[in-house]
Length: 466
Image 1 (spheres, rainbow, N blue to C red):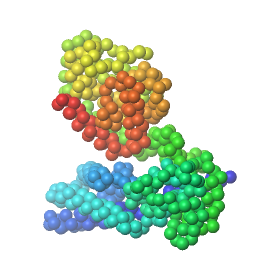
Image 2: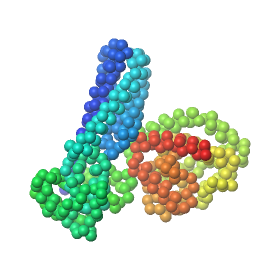
Image 3: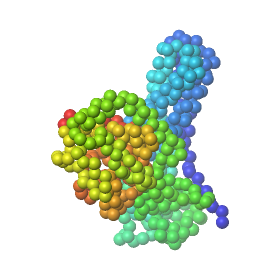
Image 4: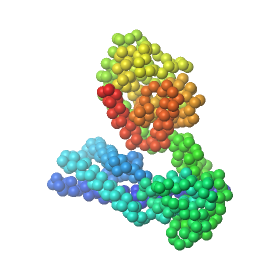
């Protein structure tokens, strides 16, 4: 039996953004040279084309050309700014290594960054405004019915209403079940319009052209019955799998042995995304070690001369896929617990040294973990590694605890910047942290890592001032 390929629907938005950016970059550089009274030549055209190619590649890596699914305007501006800045830096490096940067005047090079970036931002925002305006007026939207008045159907209706990029205008719900078995539509969702007979009737009048079937996967006979009836109409029909019943870690369509499957427990850092995250980790960590080397030296000397014991404390932790790693920290306590029983440090723990208290308050005790990142056992951003003894204790109490080890542990993470930081002396506190770790893995992107890094500095500064 041959496997049927499930093809992803291509959106018009990415193609439109590609075209607009191509035009803007081809216009902006000649415009800048004209404004700065610099002659245009063949290098102008070549530079514009290289910029287009680089922006397309960088934009794809940062997710700038992916449908936003309700992405905020601020996020859109930030993505475009980061993508253009990265492209611009790459162009400068290419010009430096090929010794072609002298072809352009410095005033033109500097002005192009601002003019080109402004053109890209303005056109992206204008396109966004036009699409949202057309969507609110119903243009280009598919008149859609949902078969299955249940949790999944209500979720789809809410998402479609919140995002015009979905291209769906939900007309209403249809279900053959009685009132007692149906979920009640809310004020924010379309009404219940009737059973499948009513659905077929409305399709015949042209009031509906698309049908989403959100019946549970176990209702195979009901789904087949609906499909049999829709086969005699011209409506487009789609089955929406009910994955709410599963705890999906990082879901995506893929193929195994030629068969389409959906991943359930998987790391998002695969392929190009994994290489990009590793490049970000390595570049920032190397620069960070150079910049904080005086701080590392001072901290080491203070620890050495104020309390007996080693400067560094290497504790056994679980890393990627649950493999054991040694995490580096400055020693901040009189003891170095690393066995089967590890007592968590409390705010006024007598084991903490005077210098250790300062290091822990400012998070400088974590700085040696930059070496873990450079060596590849940790990442800058990821779930914070817990002591092995705590892992073994909580994995028995919290469902899905070990899923946090599908990615490398991090120096900082989403839990740390969202308030779930410090002592986890109860199961409830640990559950809150694990929930944030899972959310990080599900929603991960390079841009998310960058935001967490900036938020970390803010959190540390706030704690320091308090």
